[in-house]
Image 1 (cartoon, rainbow, N blue to C red):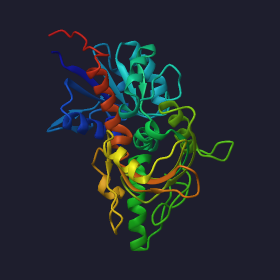
Image 2: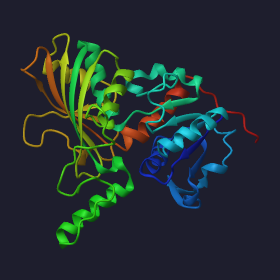
Image 3: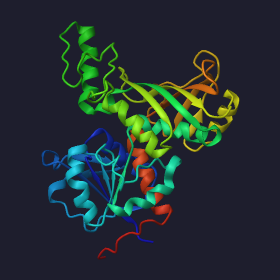
Image 4: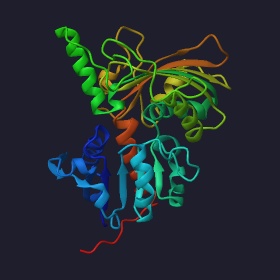
Length: 345
């Protein structure tokens, strides 16, 4: 069987590097992987397993023999390039928010709505959800199937890696500045992030919600069920990798904490770690570098009928981004929705 040719756009960024690592880890059936980036990153070396790839320029690349393009170069690059790449017959799996709400573009979390991936042929583009949405819907889906979710209230505790490498550097340098009594400089964040939390992710919208909070609302509806009502407060916390969420869920039908625990234990992509004792739950520190969505602190919410509360944690660079994109590519292959292009030997 012919292997696939995969291009990774944005290969020098946090998520691009993670994509290359995961392609190798999962032994993805690629016989060629190309690293692409902006002109200023041409020649930069990135690792792919025990090999090194030199980045080539996106602007000059010919995609006519590429099967899958994993795109993680931001919204404006994706808006311009994804349709051009799709037109050359490569399927673009895009990690930005550019295409998520386009009705002709499937928005996919494989554990939740893999079947919808078949709709990619309209534009040859599939969207990867927002990192905080991805882990949330993995946890909500099996519970929704069992007892039908009416309403969700979620507060997030999102790590700085979600805002890119510069954001990670800023947390590091500010933390150092606190200890050495030097000046703290805010470039990437509107306020200091070291020893602080910031309830602002993405831009503010008319209604007072931020764009990140809005994304969680609309993406959950598109992926899981348009009838679900969701309200979010998204907060940046001084953690390097791993997003956490406190989630209150109101169901149409009765469901106990024990039932929820059993359902989630058997659900794809979920790992329940829920002992009611000191340290009997998962924090972002343990979730970093792992693939699962970890679920802890499952308990009844006595303030509503059929209510549950839970804590969910995942590595935002993996399930929230790179891993999910590669799982989407695996769905295309496993469901025979994509065949490798014939390439000259």
